[in-house]
Image (cartoon, one colour):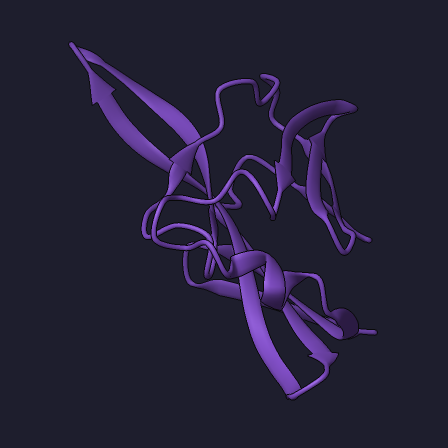
Length: 133
C-alpha cells in the first residue's frame, strides 16, 4: 500500500512496482495524473490513470473529490488495484477482467509478488522520490 498527500500543485503520482515470480522480475508502473483540459470556455483539471501493460492510454477518473489537498491510498493486491482519494474509491481495477482488449495477459504480470515499491510525485519541475518495499 502506498499513501501520499498531494497539494493542488502536484500533477503526477507514479508508483513503480518491482514484481517477482516465476520467470524473474519486472518493473511495472501505475500513473495517476492531473491535466488541464478545456470544455467549452471553461478550463478544468481532470484526473486520469494509466496502468502499464493493461491499456495503451490514460483513462479518466470521474469521481475524484474536489478540494485542494488530496490524500491518496494506492493498494495493489495480486488481483486488483484500488485507488482511494480523500476516502472515496476512485478506481477498483481487476487485472483479470478490466484490461483493454489486446492486453489479455496483463494479469499474469500483475499477480506477481511485489518486492519493491518506488514512488515519484511530480509538481511542475519538482520531483519527490520515496522508496520502500
